Length: 163
Picture (cartoon, helix red, strand yellow):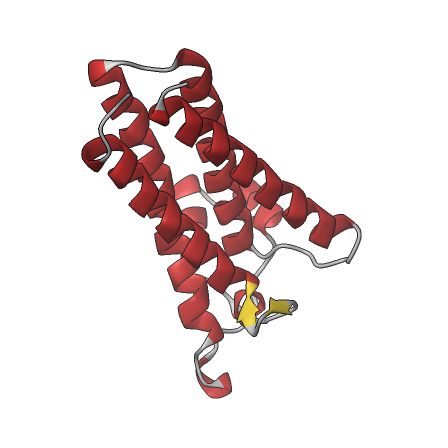
């Protein structure tokens, strides 16, 4: 088994586990995802699909750069969204924006560009911390996970020699 296939198989399992844990928090613990959390979830879904396709395909030469590029794009978007949520969570209470409408409502009522702008700007509900582990919020753990995905993807693609 090549390093690339092993990496993408592990990445698939890790992202699937993170998504499963997110669904557990939502459905078993009653923690509703805010719009920024929903976007992070979409990034994890994209990475999961890319990782599965790459693990099955086991790309050689230039195709491994294509899969890595897609993985990096989804991961960097995740870093940006999670970073924005972490920033909102660390704002003083008087600077936290007011809560806005829900994700579904924004996508149905507003034009796509306007909805994206409102979602990515975040709202008061995105600044709330409902769950922590080792004193880190979900957004902080997500930022760490996306950052590690970026680092390991770069390592596997450009540093570690294929065998």
